[in-house]
Image 1 (cartoon, rainbow, N blue to C red):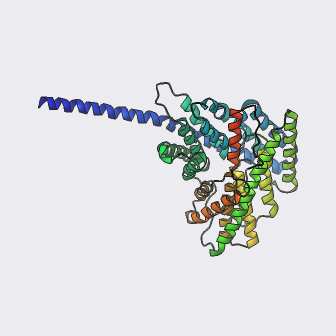
Image 2 (cartoon, rainbow, N blue to C red):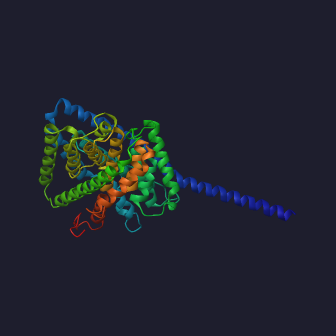
Image 3 (cartoon, rainbow, N blue to C red):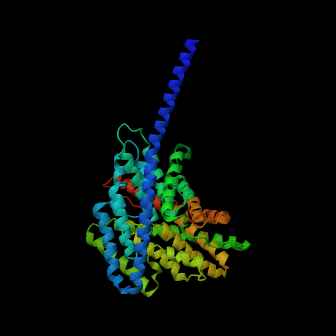
Length: 458
């Protein structure tokens, strides 16, 4: 009997020790994700507030001193480009392609190159460059940059762990950071999850679901604690829509998918052409030309060519001025092309949404739709245009769903995404982000080889 009691006691001690060791291991594995998510939420909120404040300041300056933008905009475009070119070349553009490339490079053989795509310098100059672009009226967004910023936060935390810390998958921690960044930027937790699965990786979600869900929840809760349970867009009225609205939705989704993909293709062509520039004066000349076109359009056509376009989305969704003229759709397409191809930091998420909203509003006027039907068509246009750029129909639909809290139109939004995705394939089989990711990957792996962003054989 004594022997049995001793065996039982030793077994209990062993199991207790194993349990405490497992708990300690799980806690150590989780801490970097928790810390990264908390910091991501804080930085995302600070960045969002700064972006909104400077965008409003830019609008104020334009309303009171519009002709000063003939000087302000070129200076801002050049300064934003120079900061990136001088101090952090991979902070340019959206940031999402850089994160996707970093995920692919996070293998033992190539992990040393990830530091050029993610890091503290990237965070600093991504924020500075994009804010300067916004001050000058650049048609860019903060959402793509937030993804790269969040990925950089998670990456630096993982790098700072001591040698005795349990090893954490570099790929998983970058993916979790990127998804948490998107969730915090838009306040869309489901969008962050779908974005991670559809855009960032083809890995089965079961391999990283706990870390992903935890990261998104903590980053989202941090953002909500500081900003409140806000919606990125609001609560547009879409109830009592007509049965025949499906036909306009299909039409606007197809057109937005085509135009969104065509806009992406044109930006890639311009970026290819710019890669041939050898002298700085060539880049500066291009920046001055782009900025002058933007300011001329803003002063002599309409100021809606400036900025991210969020105010325009709010106007057509929540006021009686729901029908937009044809030139607004043109401006909201031209603005991102001229701004993104400068080589400064700035994303295309918000500009793509505003362009889609302008197309939806325009076509609602053509069909003489009611207010609820117009709102539904505007949201379908937003899904369609974003899908045309990203080739991610489900991410686009879920993002708009969560931005508006209009769950009763989920099937219409998903239909718009699928139609736009099919239409976008007619222009290019690969997304804008995939093309840029391939270029960043090539630049890092073969720095002396300049490969076309958009090969003619594609």
